[in-house]
Length: 325
Image (cartoon, rainbow, N blue to C red):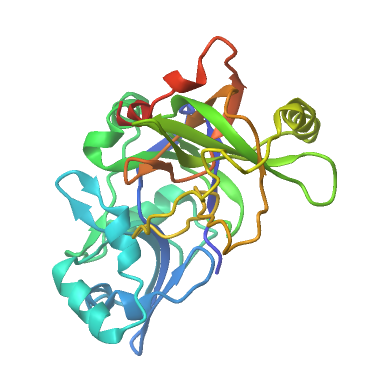
């Protein structure tokens, strides 16, 4: 079964909704029977072998199908990097990590009867004998309480808030829930772009921020309308430049990271080792972008959203410390 999804909104909806924290981890569907426990990622990837402590805890439950989030909780919230490290090919390493960085499974839906209204599924879920490392997500019908969660995501270790209508069915693959995330903004230097391959247009902007005189690649902006992609292409082609003496002539994201390469995140490019699939531009244009999460303090986890050009900003004044705010 595919998981039910959520549509991004800028404000919490009001009405006959129930609200939950949006946890910062791996979305995971769990199927528990008397003979086995199966864990699947959002994309159907099997996860059970990487989280034996979760499998053992779920095996104590009666037959059930659950939707939830795998995460590694710390005093500062969810440690997404440690969670990524848990997906390791070596069984001995998997066993070691299950002891040193144990995961939790935060459950937020019971999906064995998907046609039931959400409020009824939640009532049944609350009757399950859950015990750590399996936990039931908090829930409120008070939009003000949900707003307080949203305003304090950093301290609570959550990624936002999800609103679910009381009467909603569980519809696999459909964006029937509503998620709201706190957006932050940064003013970034455009160091290059990746062109679309089939038509004239910009596929993504490569964004950077200065740190100690070096232009650090922090992520991409890739969400544009078709007309906007063409406009950006015609704006940036006049300032295209040779790779020689460009801040990234020797590559970007050269340091290895435990975060790996997340979809849409700041990719890695090494001159001489990889095909150059991007066009360098003179680092003089500044744009304001909106982003949600950062990893390792230096890169956007997801593609940022282009807001506007900032002709009033000098590129050299766009510093990495913006991401620490």
